[in-house]
Structures are given as structure tokens and as C-alpha cells.
Amino acid sequence: MTETINAWIDWLLQSLGLSGPYILLATIPLAVLQSLFGFFPLAILIVLHVSEFNVIGGMLVSWMACNIGAVVTYFLFRRYLFEWFDRTWRSRLKRYDKWQRYLDRYGIWTLVLLRTIPIMPSNIINFMSAVSPIKTSAFIWGTVLGNLSYIWLFGTISSTLIVPREEWNGYLTWYGVFAVILIGIFIRRHWGHLQEDKRSRME
Image (cartoon, rainbow, N blue to C red; front, side, top):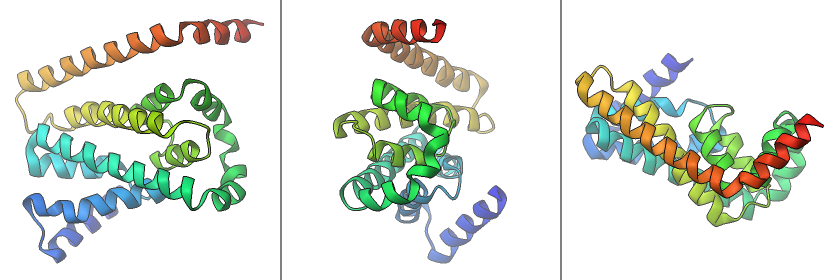
């Protein structure tokens, strides 16, 4: 399935005659569609951008496209399609109830985790955020940091064939520093909540 979608994206770019920076005319709309329907992995766009703009440029472009897609989807559902979505999809999201509770409790930090680790599709994360009481500013910050974490990690891993090992190790080391800082801030801000959750699990 992934190979089919990858071939379709290559065909689309060739048909439109897009190359270089102009591929953004196709990949940004594709990122919005992916954030809305989740019909192909974000990894495809990241690899495409990295191959076109090199590692750092490709990761930055992918980060921008994913942020645009997520924010557009969030506002679309929260402002215009909330009632329809809540009526049609609420029952289908029951299996994600645990993560919905974490999202309501930890807000920004749950978004960072869910976007870093592919526990669920990114469009489901956008839908859950739209129907949760999370503030818009928290959603945007969680999305920005979470997408940065995911794209930095995946972009580094996917670049192993096009950059020297020393450079690849540098990207991975700095990602580790970034992750440790985020974890430290999370623990400091939510130590009380973490202890409450621990006690409730032991009861």
C-alpha cells in the first residue's frame, strides 16, 4: 500500500512538472489531506522532502507542512464540523478513551508523546483534540513540539543512506538532548499528577 501511494505521489509531481521548492505546491495540500483523512504515512512526505532539500531543510519543510495540516484540520473540526464529528465518530473513538483522558489531563504533553510515537494515526489525534477541552494555544504548542520531535527523529533515521555516519550521530545526539529536556520539563510541571496516577493504579 505504501509503495502504491509513493508511486502515486511521484506520478503527481511529474504530471504537475514540480521540482525543487515548487514541490511544496503539492506536498503542503497533501499534508493537509493526510491530517484530515490519514490515508498515507507522513513518513512518505518526510523522505520526499529530505531527498529534495537535504536533511535539515527537508526536516524543516516537513515540520512546517505537518503543522499547517494539523492546525487546519483542528480549526475545521472545532469551528465547523464539531457536532457532525461528535455525533458520527464519538463511538468509533472508544478504543482511544485512555488517551483522550490523558489528553484532557496533560494537554500539550500528551500531544507531544502521541505525535512522536505512532501510537495512533495523526488525523485521529487532530480529531480527539478538536473534541477535547484543550485550549487552542496548548494544541498548537503540543503540535509544534510533537511534530518537531517526530520529524527530527524519523528524518534522522531515514537519512542514514545520504549523510556520513558522524553527521547522523550528531543529529541523533542532539535529538536525545532535546528529548531529555522535554521529559525533564514534563516531570517538573506534572509531578503531582504523576504521583496521583501512580497511587490510583496501586489501589
